[in-house]
Length: 159
Ligand code: RB5
Image 1: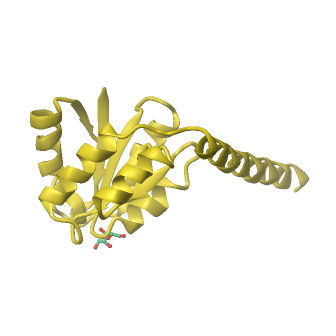
Image 2: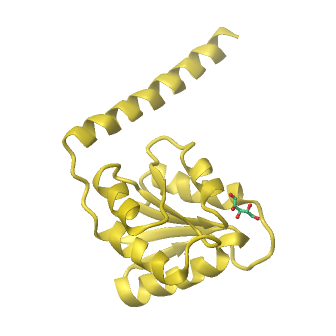
Image 3: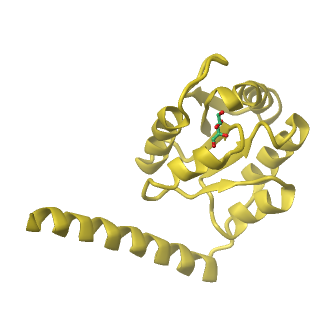
């Protein structure tokens, strides 16, 4: 499995250490979508390419990091089929996979230390979606996405 990872400047240092962790400990291939240094950038510019590649199915799992994780989760969850979970502790990281089948893990470098962040990645990657009633709930979210998209298309057609 290859994991796509991205950050803004606020998440750059943590991105670099998570990349190291993924390749050394988890032994997974990584596609780094940037940013590539700590110069100030805008988080949507780096969240969008990651979310797009998850939406399209090019990648199954992604990791996004900014200062708090909030901006990246707002951006990523704009994309259909993306379920981005901002996690701060091991319990939410595990539940984000078991109940929500999160396909992007989001973290905040300014709120989550390196060791805990590695543990969140480990737990999220090892988690198994439980399906059942949780699948039904995800289907409802997919229905909402479809309804919003088709209402927008109808709105455009009526203009
Ligand atoms: C950048 O200063 C910061 O606003 C960004 O990394 C993120 O925390 C936004 O939600």
